[in-house]
Length: 140
Image (tube, helix red, strand yellow):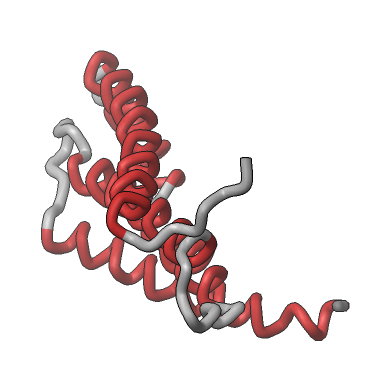
């Protein structure tokens, strides 16, 4: 396809990422995390973003719909919006801040709980969507 053919994908990923990052920043303004506290905002944003990604991937790749989704929808919503909304960098920074504040137990709890919750959220999003959406039958 070449570099020129990838420009629309790069553009929609950038646009989706910008919207996702703004949504995440908005969440941090509405629900700020006090110093030394468990970073509930980042934890919740990451869990919601992972669940949304699970829902989107089923809807965009497994459902029986009459019209195929636009080929740029998946990179816009998945890589772009969900990628910009969820945040590994803030997750790492929150952990480092807790450790620097002498909150090693809280930091380790946050590390493990975020990982397990993110994985569970993707699984729950996929499972819930498959339960209610008209999913294509997979060949045996």
